[in-house]
Image 1: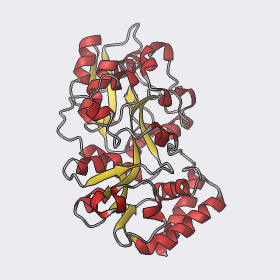
Image 2 (image 1 turned 180 degrees about the vertical axis):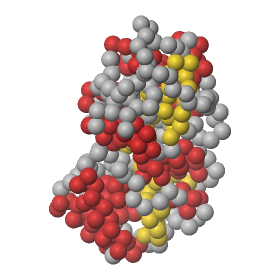
Image 3 (image 1 turned 90 degrees about the vertical axis):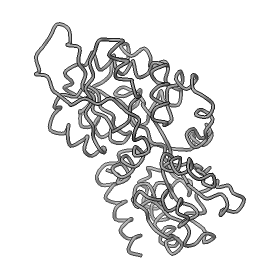
Image 4 (image 1 turned 135 degrees about the vertical axis):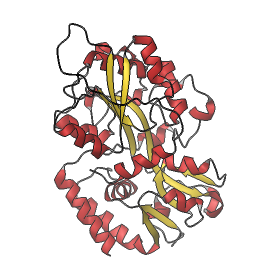
Length: 360
């Protein structure tokens, strides 16, 4: 499991605190068969990661009462369901965790006929490398990993390449990288023209050599506070998540965010129905509701992340739809990749490379 998920998830949602998502205590119903499902739905979600009145709106539209329980990161989600589903109907895993859960038979195949609003999904999100044919998931929100920078300190005030962080001494001692193997190695692979998810030994050796050589120029490998170092003026450029940089951009006009032209990681949170869901019909109805244009608009307005719902996006203000920190250009997105679950062996190889980089 990549380290970024537990760190980043909490951080990127700290930006959303105070949005007033409706939360009720979780209760689980006994497993007995009904001719028609009871009007209940159990949702397992990230904190403050739903529209302010989405659950109430769904209840008014369908009569189905939603009870929401919260998890802190993907590992907690996986652990909760690993031994069997305790009663959840809808879960919100990130792309590589979803892939892991598909392989472990922990989520069910969706009945697309019951989710006609899948037609509202923006074209790039109708297919997914981690879930071919979107058989098990709908896209919920997405974002990128890029470079946060102080315009006044960067030559020309513009960043368009990973070079300034990975392959240059121009800003020696004034740059930071994330503190985890998967994402630093992944973007270095992208900079060198390879896949973010490469397992090729020769390509990974080039990455290791480059990062060992660059290490003397890096101020710190920052677990989850690159945006704070940037805001405090301790670094001039940092590798960070778009949500974290958007947070400090709101307070400092000199800070900006860019996804390098070589491409990067694009993360995607999904909604899926876990195996053993007590209310699968209601779960399908909820997924369809989330993909409704108006419902999707409200969710995006509340939580401020990029929506993959084209119908919802069409209703949104230009301050949202034309913000390049939220929505990079199609050309840039086309060069980005999702992080895939590469298996235990490939993860171990990257961890060993990372250990050597840190020790260098």
